[in-house]
Length: 225
Image (cartoon, rainbow, N blue to C red):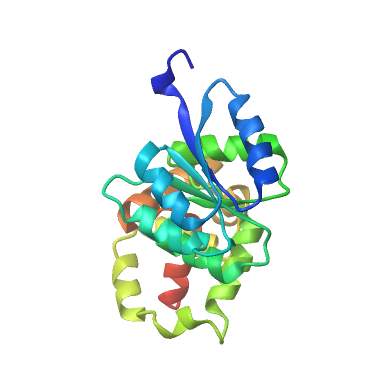
């Protein structure tokens, strides 16, 4: 990037200083990315976002005090919110699910290779969801299990009404997403190209006003599809 205006500005939120330092070194080493600030808990994250107006917030899920889920909800309720990418160790499915429902664009594991974390930041900055299909399936399972509080508060009728706006192919794509399939697997199931799968998925986000594949999958499950 040639100008500072084009930089993707990132706020790092994690209660571990060493994690923040490592992420800062990785991010600031990229010509198109820049760390706008750091925070060690949810309250500090909200303040930092208000002050810096970053493009992306890299948000830890579990922190002392206000956790990442609560902070994400408040940040995403702003009139012009940044994109939120969650950091997780995969022992926090419920918190992660809540963040995705709130509109976070995806998540990465803390032990993910630095280059993949950087790519995830770029994707989220462009409004592209970053969700592993296998991880998506796990989160969906947590959301739709018999003990999940989410299953007791969903409206099947409302979900079906939203899905009724889809074409047959878009609905088939949504069902495949709910089964945890990635784009090549969906293309194989529906006998269409990966490019067409991506086009259908983009229309799903637009028509359903959703931000990520987990939200699509949960809507399908809520509708009983």
